[in-house]
Length: 141
Image (cartoon, rainbow, N blue to C red; front, top):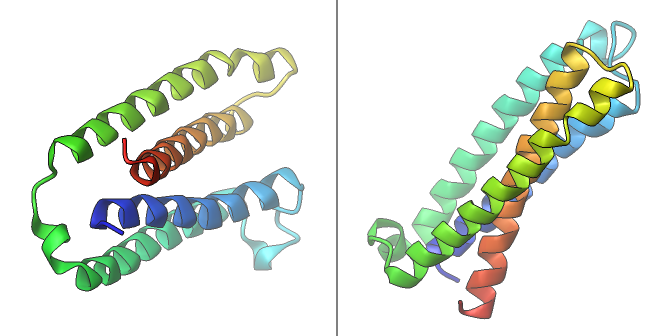
């Protein structure tokens, strides 16, 4: 497995773990002053972002150590094409979800809730990019 494919797997797993936990707790209604020792949704978001950064750094360092040549080598044409295609797909998903943000507004969601829906759109787009990269690397595109 190449370094760039490992990076896509790292992004997929770390975003799923960190923001999956954030959105499960957020949408289950457990975030508030009664839970998490007084941590609110902002503190949970901060914890999720810091955990994501820590996981990304640690796992990328491990991946770079296991494939030292691939980590330093410039991307070849195939890898560049995979990156461009996946970024394009992620962009289109993000644009559709951004337009779809009008739907929660019609149901009375405001402020922080809308910001969380926008964050969910960004997370879904990032997952789309990672999944597309993994599929294209596995397929040999």
